[in-house]
Image (cartoon, rainbow, N blue to C red; front, side, top):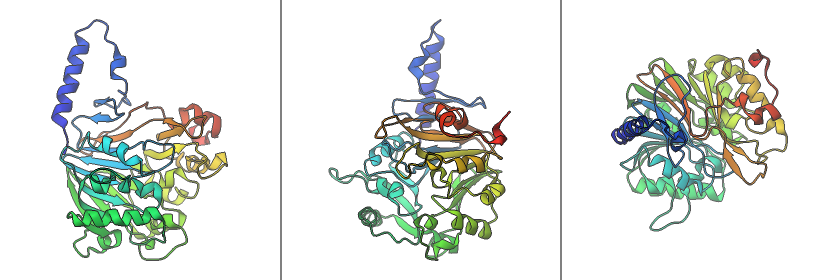
Length: 375
């Protein structure tokens, strides 16, 4: 549940106080950013972006370390959906701190674990703590958990994740696979009404029930819709998975696309993008990290990703970036929030800045400007 009333009061007081002085020090409100499309937002000491009077807020979180990973909070009135909880166990406290600004009752109505890679599930586990672990599945009451049907993982973190799921089940969480959702089996549903005119639809792709050599292709895919606005999440789905997603679903043009596999060159295919034609693309990654490759062109967000997205939009936002010391990190856009009212106006506000990826110094030094973006 949300603390909207408190936020409105605080924002109103801030405006009144500021207006009472001839020279107001706006640095006191560092973190306040708007993209010029209307609406109100303010940052706070946790780097959160406070959304006032919005029906839908989609939050792409920084994860408190220099490792790439995913975590998205979707806030609809009194309903919260959390998709993934990367990137490491110590991310759990960073994630919880953010969630607690929007979820007062300690209840996450829906949690989705897209696949079994560490950078998507470690925060569900967290570290040892007193009286219980710091992980999301230990700290919150989770009503429904939707998870990947298949995995080939035998890692310690996956074993820890299974323990966390059992803990949640013991506390009343209903646990379903995406395949059960698609088939409307065992109490699971293909479509969930989240209120506020928002629906959450679990999409189908064949690797829910077929083995593959690429763990990423087991990813759960979900489409959120509010009126004519659609928001697509595909986890780390790769080329074969994207082809199956296209073949098995009537995908709409999307207001928002969470970049597949952190902006990898092996995802975000031309075929998928030609169908969804996204207006806004958000990338959850530590930009420029050599964690997975030393080839600069393939570092997240990759040159191939940029080239494929460019014909449709230049509105690409990135959460985090590495510093000159690869063990350090800093905000690029920071926590990114895409929000809307009544399924109409959609806005992007960020905790650090609203600079488009193509306008950052990192892009200018490490990427080639696509022809579609040249004046």
